[in-house]
Length: 292
Image (cartoon, rainbow, N blue to C red; front, side, top):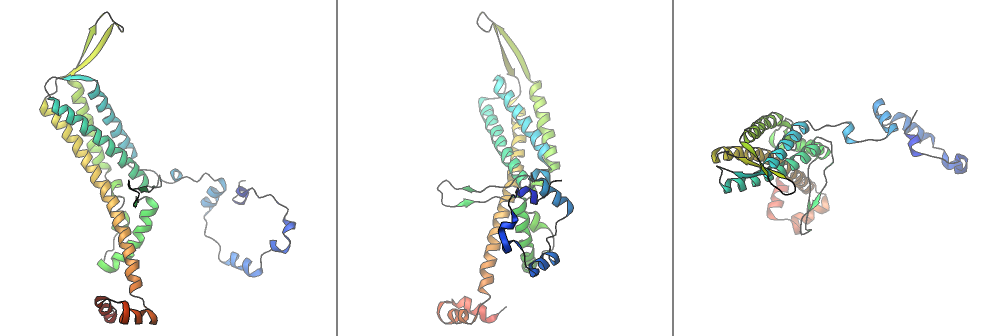
């Protein structure tokens, strides 16, 4: 049977340690009376190793997100293969490519973000282009840890007694119905576009002996409607993702500010003298004297 100690691959003659090998009675008593709380399944997982986030967490919106990504990619391929749109002006076609490309980029960001806050992946920090600052992103562990601190804080400051401080960085996980609705619309749009396409085979004497061209008679109005659906989906994903990122970063800022003002409210005798006689502003002195 595998064991946690066995994973250490320990191999040495214990007698060479001498008396250093033995623990004191006090240490043994401490180990016996205050052991780590580890459940059986946790012991087994530790013994077997291969601890990975995906053993315990899943992204609840990954399937519908991947299907949307696949459908949008198909849309892109169809547009790329059509050599001429009979009714839609060139401007609409350019707009279509831009709209599809924007949605594809947003879907990739949304997929990464939801996998992070679902616990499947750990988020990684990025450095700004000028190297002046580090940009942090929420994931499951960060969001829960921050949320617990925020809940204690806003419960006192604002009387909040719900889970919004814990869930505010992961609202993107709770829009599965909206994603499914957008998928239905985009799939229907793809079917409508395909219905307008005709195939023309041109036979010639070259190599290859024939070429196939695709044309669409989709109207400008219908093309704009389809692209508006893409824009709507893009906005929904972006708004939710950016909300989660902003909530997390605002939360980090608030908790850091709390630690600052918390230390300002706890002064020893020497600190009180310095604040009241040398370094404190009138506002700070007034607040410390009021003690409220």
